[in-house]
Image (cartoon, rainbow, N blue to C red; front, side, top):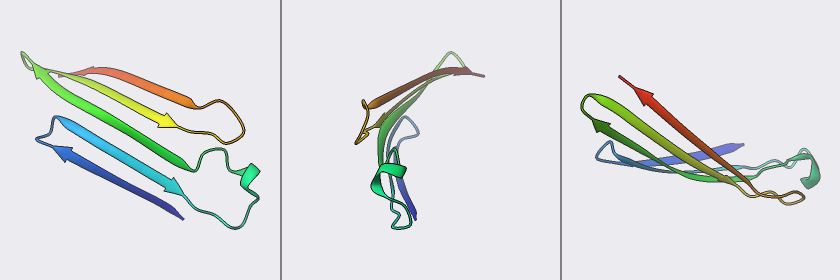
Length: 73
């Protein structure tokens, strides 16, 4: 089962969280169970500037940090 939630404030700031639950596999077969992140959507002179950050804590490896930056019209 996968669970996720997102909260957006004024179409500017977004907070996200997700979780994967499984009892079909050993714990070592699932790399990430929890995910958390935030996003910013800011408009300047008709151009959207997007920034997303995601944190994925891992049990048997180093944690993962994902950063995405985008521009849109």
